[in-house]
Image (cartoon, rainbow, N blue to C red; front, side):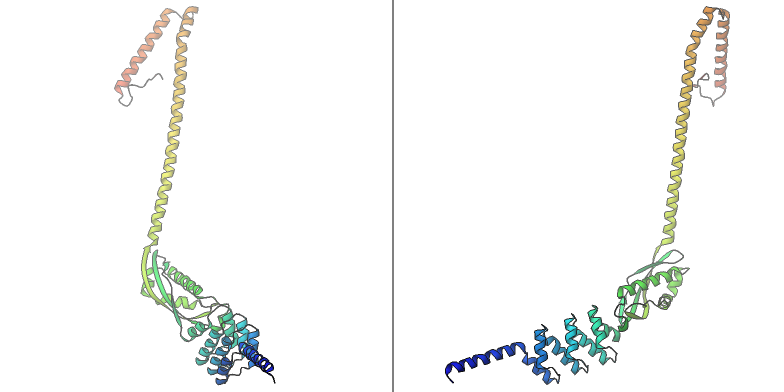
Length: 331
């Protein structure tokens, strides 16, 4: 064999080993063998060709086998290709296995693909979580407001974790139950004396239906007396009634003023007609005298009668203090 052939063989071997080590993670394969995990070289090459990171599959598989979980490469690879978090799912399966909980891989994978943290759900199933409601305002029948705060102990329900409502729904239902219980009480003192009445009523409603949790207990942490809502409503009602009465009184006053103005206008019109009629009297008297329909003595007698009438009017005004002196009786 000449030197050129030897060099070609060396180059071919180098190329083969370079291609082999680029496709096969030998170190990962050795770790799997050491952990007694059955992963063939062809599986690793297939992962590379399918653009799957082998350590994302092999390391969780090693952890699952050591934790006593029966899994295979195809299950983990399928979950990885579906966009799931393989490592979290394996940790959840190990935690459930240690806690003697029945959690199949398919359910854990479905919970993970649904967007929920399956590991946190398993931890919450083992160690219940306490969530606290904000101050819930409720008014008793006597009009007194109560501010109640509750602590709800919940445990994750793995069977209802997919499609079940979250913590926000539980808090909303508990708040609704508090408002209903306080609102049905005749006096706020009943609630202050027996705050456990709220817990019993709320628990009896089955508020965890359709949620991803199981309510274990509801404890009333604090109950404070708030505003006197009944008195405030009565005050507002009285203020509204007063405004309505004032508006009606103003309407009547405006109508009275309008009627007074109308009457004054009618009086002025009548006075104008009287003045107009009085202005025609001298012409009528002159015409009567000129035509001989009335004599001079009749004219003087008429003037005396007018003077006598004015004197009697003056005397009647002087004797009656209720009649103003400046009123023209003739008008």
